[in-house]
Image (tube, rainbow, N blue to C red; front, top):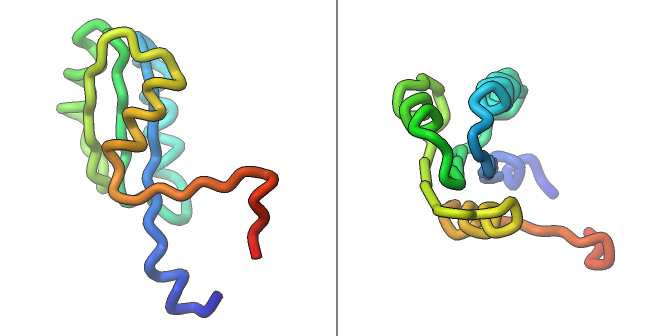
Length: 99
């Protein structure tokens, strides 16, 4: 992989959440402290109280955030919804190899 290829990497972070504002704050702080920031953060809210949506709307971050509310989106379903919302997705299973 040449150095030019490293410049076109797109990173999306999918955050499934349900009534865990404390954890969401910690996650976003951790993301903002990374050396390489993601291109976007997708927050999939599974029927939380309005606190999560209000926080996301007011939270200032240099990375675009996408908020998606879904009723009864358990973690697996929430991640799949997040994948549908992202600009680019890459998966690597242990059996697929890298090269």
